[in-house]
Length: 307
Image (cartoon, rainbow, N blue to C red; front, side):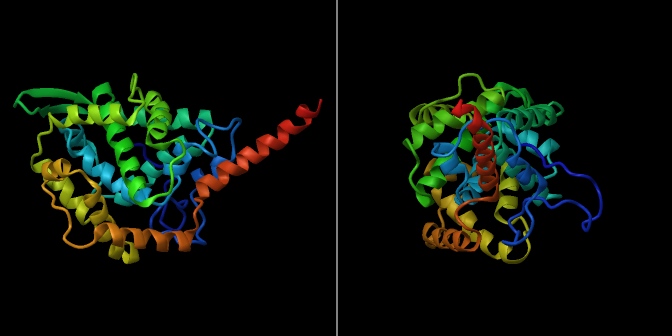
């Protein structure tokens, strides 16, 4: 995914970025406030499956689940291993991913397209080789449609899976989410992404048949298990990680070398997310700003509607 932007400087002068360490009264990042700008309603909107899923707190678990799944493609894992600096600045990488998700979900169409184009530009230099399941050396490039499709599919499945366990109803059900989120897949360069849950699962099964876990996958899983987050978030992260692992399919856990936690990970994750809702509210700053944009656009069009 993309990385957050912002001017360079000391920690005191740098603009705020998204972080799970954010307190309720901390100012949101500038890109969050920018979602109030724009000239149209965006790709989705209130009442959409994407707003319901991507705007809910289970995305905290979904993000971990998506990262775990994405390591199972040898080309994607090679790109992360060879080019990513996620160990050096995990919160910075998280800010970039959250920014991309929020902008494509809640921004106007121009902002969504720009966010995807920015990620594609970052991907241009991510190239190399990897060894496939049959032992053959193959080239990879992050903008190859095969890798883009895998990342899109893993993301989609992860977010649906987390929301079905810990979120509310999805307008139109999981099929609606897959169909709507396919629009972002197309912006990222995926031709004909799956538009039904059954189609999504069939594609994922095909990808997993070529999964070849190795030491790079094991190293990524070790980091995701203990990313070294500070403070309260560092204390509750193991619960969210356990919930993400518990929500995976047994086959996926086996490929990752993980076992379902012996403790009630799903229940404890639900409790942590409930505390988060009480602390931060049910509506994210991104959605609040998107709704402000929609209200502004409705007000601007009102005089014309009276003529």
